[in-house]
Image (cartoon, rainbow, N blue to C red):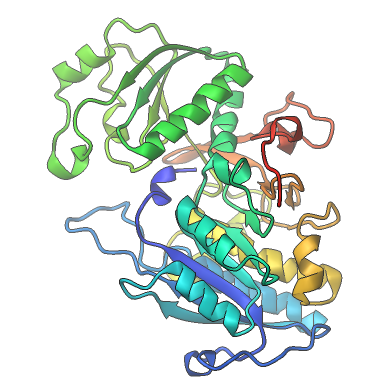
Length: 406
């Protein structure tokens, strides 16, 4: 997935719970107790609007990124709910500056809400998870790809919809292996998330027998795009001279400089990683498995194309609706353990139903490998097999996990 969509400071918290109506005024009152059988599910949405860039940026995140995915998911939930007597409503509240996600989560849990969908950095996901521990709250992480959240810092009350960095880099590595592109030139940005992405790629390279023949830090400034501090053609040629490689891998989750690498190298080589050829959950060019219909519905609803964060928030909200439909109840005590049950499955326009891994609560899903204007392939690739499901060839498998739920 294009990690630039995940590294920005703006945060979105989508909360789901029982009781209440859809109006903002009534949302300030304690949620009314709900009948678990009928599953009247009140959904509260708290988000921090994206700050508009100071200059024109065609790829700038829209203000309703993620929120629009939630709105479509609620409509989808209610479509199914008409047959099962489950109803869903969405309340949206913009977080003002200075209000913490933890305070918002505690407030909503105090009103009876038992499902939280977070589009937050890893540290805030952990803070919210710890703050509501023991409150029978299920949390869905839709924006933090950090592998530690699925490993040493895993939490029993957190489920991960966004693929981990390991899943993203494994998807790319499988394709490179299939194409017999074995020699990698890794270019690492200055930010901490860039280093984490590079760590994930190194692990994937070892896993799939790829060779990192060279590695260099990006040396042209951390704000290249904003300041115009970009390499000249001659400087870029010096940067890539003398390296034997099939593919340049860029680690630039802030989407600051990675787009300056293609066509500035001495040798004509493709670029992949966080820019160029990327691994994503969703892309406008995905049209198979009913995705074209989902793309059209989203465009009618939001007036724009669906982005990965929209899809991830959509999948989180749909997880609640789908679980309630399958179990015929919206009771949190029933649904919380059911998400990790092998019997649970989520239809999500990926050709197969998606499930959560019981050992780290990561959503198993195919990952699309795309360039800006076309889908290239879908991982897992054919030929990569697993004793449970080929989807478990992406990311951390059970024997390697360091997650120990407390």
